[in-house]
Image (cartoon, rainbow, N blue to C red; front, side, top):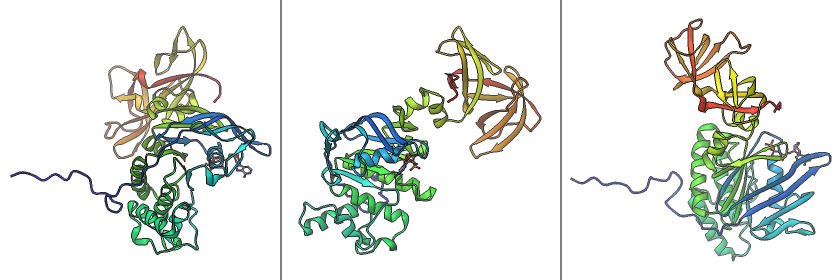
Length: 368
Ligand SMILES: Nc1ncnc2c1ncn2[C@@H]1O[C@H](COP(=O)(O)OP(=O)(O)OP(=O)(O)O)[C@@H](O)[C@H]1O
């Protein structure tokens, strides 16, 4: 007897309908600076988002992410630097293409649906080049793709946050923009809903093929969604690369901290090595004061045998893993370790710590 295999997983949103395909553009910023009065929100930033690429713009609150998006959209006019769409200068010295002529779609944090228009009118709003019948048809198709066609006649206030987010996505992709900008599009959703809406949004983005720049302050979200991550600090681009590159080879301690929890130990590098209470590790940098940053997952904790002697101070059960705090005589602060749950220790037990050198990052001590 043969088994029937369903070739496609059942979509959670609507029927299996493909989103309209966009012709993706390259979006690039060159030497971009923007100020609000004395505040420099974006500082000499250069970044290119390649056609069809999804890039997450990541950084703490106030680092300039939204400002960069607003400049790209044409809501804000930069102080200096250029913005190009492919080879076309859209904002720069003496040039300013108005937002509606840029072919850029936007999804705002608060979705920004028009309260006085019903859902299908909201989505059809940007389809100015089509007749009203065609615009309605395209809007309904976009709503169908995000599983919201049955709400076409509802008004935004009658929809949940997750439903409004889907409508906002349908509205942004319906005109088939070459570039889509999303500003913290999932931040208004609770954690469980956020995961499923994010996955579905990603599927729609991949189908449309649009170039996409997504603002987020959540490294995990950036890693899940983006082909590349651009990390900002104080208006500057600190590092851009794949999640793996940023995680494995952070350019400085700030980037390292963003992607993993670290034990930070001040030490002095000599002859390409640094000696710490947890062992001696290669540095890859010149001699001088350094910070040895040791990932919590790089520590193995065993009851006896080889390893650095410590005393277990506390253990916290986190499901699959446990967080241990261990005191070491020569260190003022306890060392933290993230180990598989179920370790056979109790507080005050003597333990041995073994450090995997591949989980040790060494940076010049520059006070970052
Ligand atoms: N309209 C404005 N007028 C004056 N200052 C502003 C304005 N908008 C932003 N700023 C300032 O510019 C800096 C960058 O703000 P921006 O909103 O771009 O950062 P962000 O990284 O998007 O932050 P968040 O994640 O909190 O939205 C901040 O210091 C902010 O206070």
